[in-house]
Image (cartoon, rainbow, N blue to C red; front, side, top):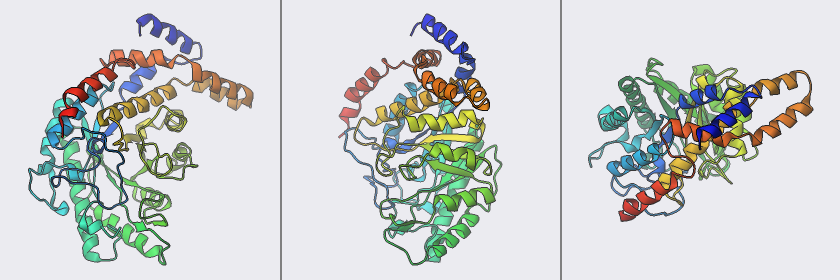
Amino acid sequence: MSPLSYSTARETYAALGVDTEAALTTLARTPISLHCWQGDDVGGFERAGASLDGGGIQATGNYPGKARTLDELRGDLDVALGLIPGKHRLNLHAIYGDFDGRKVERNAIGVEHFQSWIEWAKTRGLGLDFNPTCFSHPLANDGFTLSHRDPAVRQFWIEHAIACRRIGAAMGRALGTPTVTNVWIPDGHKDLPADRQGPRERLAAALDAVFQESFDEQIHRDAVESKLFGIGSESYVVGSHEFYLGYAITRRKLLCLDMGHFHPTESVADKISSVLQFAPGILLHVSRGVRWDSDHVVLFDDPTRALMEELVRGGFLARTAIGLDYFDASINRVAAWVIGTRNTLKCLLAALLEPTARLREAEAAGDYTARLALLEEAKTLPLGAIWEEHCRRQGTPGDRAWLPAIQSYERDVLAQRR
């Protein structure tokens, strides 16, 4: 896109009171946390040939070329990050440690198992985020972890989560940017339970034990993540939205809102201004659940745009951490990272370029006709020219230039993996 095209688009937006330079500055300063598990279908590196087994998580598809080793995953991430404009972050699950072929129980993991990730991130100027892995483990096979009725099992997962928080804090301290460590558990019943209260009481007590140790928020922040239902927990999820909303508010934690974790007719965007009246901040997991929490690649679509519009309109960006959470094995996995992250950024840019002041003026005056007309006309403003300028300034290929790089990488690298 030529500078003239950007200049023309800038003037078009300026006529509506929108400063494109300010929008580009904010966009460049807003990191997206890429999820490592897109690269290998949530297998991790605890043991060779690991695959999902339990916990209500399922990666669908068998596209060739998934990462099988740490080096392959990091190589794939380097390619993806080189095609995404801006400086971003990486979100790790606990099963992605550098275990060097040794068996390490999850309640015994330490920062030493993630030191190579810290060095990898440091050389690239990236921040890291972290997650306990409360699935794909014998002690999670019955569908319960932190709310388990067996105190010994519950204690194992408490110790795992404590270890993960310490690792997250070490990451934040080493990299100079706070790590968000997010707790999600699959606990629930496939069919109707007789006792809904007991597991939630146990979960609250377990979380209090997990969070007993405090860390400076300049190096580490905690988040808790709810879910409506999952595979194997269709009738009852212990960590519901209402449970974690109350917990986040009373314990001053970030509340994670995952776009795939609610009923398809619910608007996650509508929850933001309510949650942030009371909670200190939110973590967004940007995803696309088509019929269930199926974690499709993020699109430049209405739900994602609405999410970003709420963040910008409410001035909530400073209180929000944005991450991705999908695992699509039906297409090129590296391309899935690139497509989803670029679309997330485009949705944010569209929100930053919205003529919000004009819209609010019309609304305050009770002129809902003008508000609706402007909202619709804004959809055809020259967003593409501003996006291309962002890619140019960040030294990243534009929309018609990045796919050949992926195709070449697939031919030369991914296709050689058997």
